[in-house]
Length: 295
Image (tube, rainbow, N blue to C red; front, side):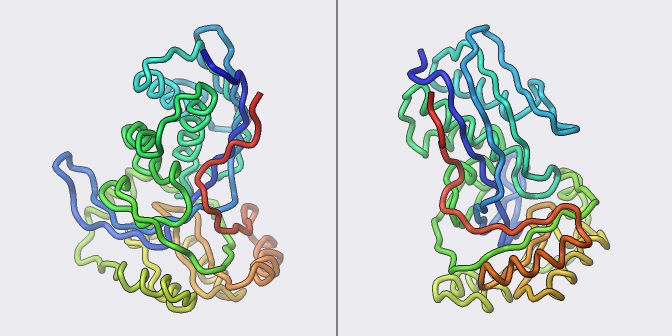
């Protein structure tokens, strides 16, 4: 039985500051080496035990799946399997702010927030390692979205090493184009002689707090597969308003620019949003999820 019948959880999005594909594992999944960063753009999930024995997801965002295919639903079922508990049925109202098909881990973030919320509501006191064990069965980005902050992620994303990001801010643009993650990896597999990231050089710049150096080492292998003019245009537009570096995140299509001061990012946004309907200033955050209400 749940100690708390309701909960509001925040699910923070992420950016890939580097993303390299370094091989495949025995199951055929791509092996990654990527530095990921949690950012302040988030979804909000109101979660309630409904005692009907059935799960329900409510969201007014067009195209948002509210059935058992949603990672929120899968997270509820996986939590029950792992703990042996029966939730009694869960209703989740989603305030969807993270863009879809953008490379910002919107679905994975919602999944992570659901797992962390249920752990709190049922007082199962699972360690982050255990939550990540559940999460990796649901999606490669879910463990990072549970851990949050700045992490070097390897394997399919589940092997994490904490890092520290110097003070900065991001302007994120979501162009009109959307990119399917499976399609992005399929296109990547068809490419020849794709360069690789010098991840250690990037981390070295992080350690000495060199924003300019960090930006010079940013890299995303999947940009070579994207081949979308709108993505390159978004990068160019960010450089034009003063970004120190710009990169597509994940499999796209969101693009971010790095600024060394929040005011510079805010000033840049005022210019950028004249041409882009979806654009935000994002700050780095140190967690992947946050519980803001229990009832």
